[in-house]
Length: 564
Image (cartoon, rainbow, N blue to C red; front, side):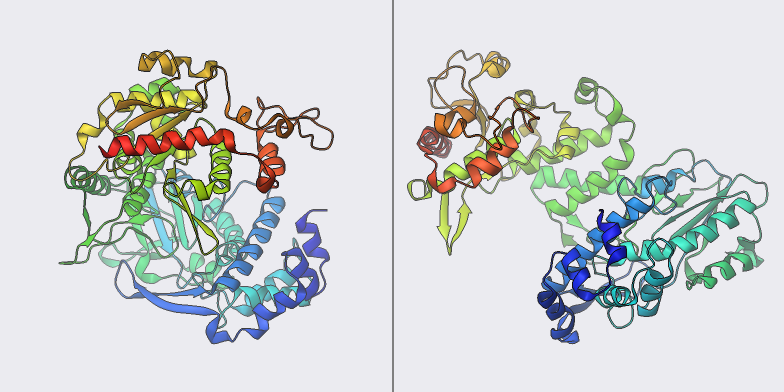
């Protein structure tokens, strides 16, 4: 039985608590024992167009409960809509402002409408009523009441709660149905991203039931549109309606849609300027922190006169990631080698930034692994041997404090650098280093070494050729700049799993033996992930990690060598 089906069968607070992974007592404590004034922290942030936006951030315990409710409702949403194309593109998997904007490209007219106080307009009664009356839920009134109590604060959906986006989408679906019907009659295209509604058409005259051209060429929402929106409990923000013609720049949710979906030129130029400043001086200034507008739909660079703020790498990465996702939709479909050697402009820029962030601007030594499980083995071994390697790790207040960092080979990082899986990934990193990427950066940097940790099996042959090195006897190999290569052993033909004792490697799980060549396993064998979770992690204190000591000794030697 799915969680969606279990939710529909729930009849009490206890049923909902159990479904969300709570004991009824703990669940009730969060809801009813914590005073209302202590459930949220309230503050304001400036809006793009003036004024302030009120943020109500839930306390940790309530936020976690709301996150569990959000996960449950998302699971329900996707089960309900598994055969339906999305109308709304906000807060959903595989949906973004790009999917929202592309519907409106190359149109004669693009009309944007903003809903007034989108989250606050959804009150306790609307949430409660929806979960009782909606045919897909039709929940027991006690369960609907508890859901509304979790989700609402001061009789509204708070902006800052993890479950506000999904509940707003569920309730907003009735609006979408009405808007789709209206758009179809008027021969328009409709989409919604949170509180942003967009209508577009190639008709000679824009339909008056949706928008009217009043005096001084000022466009306003048509009566039919206003009435249909108000029937479902929402209202138009009259200060945020605008019509855009083909002869001028047309945008929706912050993206240009005239001929194809793109970033505003000035936005990209600003990002490029900030990168240039960072690479030359080690710092950059931002007019205001890039933020997501009221409905989380797009990044905007907001200007505060005479008030520049020193930017962070995190902020700049957010800007570059956003631009990259939009501008590189087609480029990412190209073959890996084509993307690596013939990148487009944003890929080049983003690649330089990531190289700066991960390899130049280091706050401690960095270790890079061939595979994801390698890191887990190393961390377990290092924690087990902590007392012998205080230069690499230290235990304080029962918590481990690492003095080396580990690169997370994220999907985005692999995409930008056009990195393949396995050992080849480390070969690509070496090649980028050899292209003298570091020469592009000025100012303080390269304060710590970058260490590539490699097995000694046949998969390393390509790297050995690249390094012109044929044996594993040296404790390390310095490649260029702050880049080093360290092998797990001086013996040929070893993978990192072979550093464990035979009795560990021969451990059976549900009668199945371990196969280090497989990641997940199959019906007859289990792979690396289960080996780590069920064998290594669960028995850490009883496992002999002595064969990992030479690796950590080599790390120390590399760090010492780089300090010279």
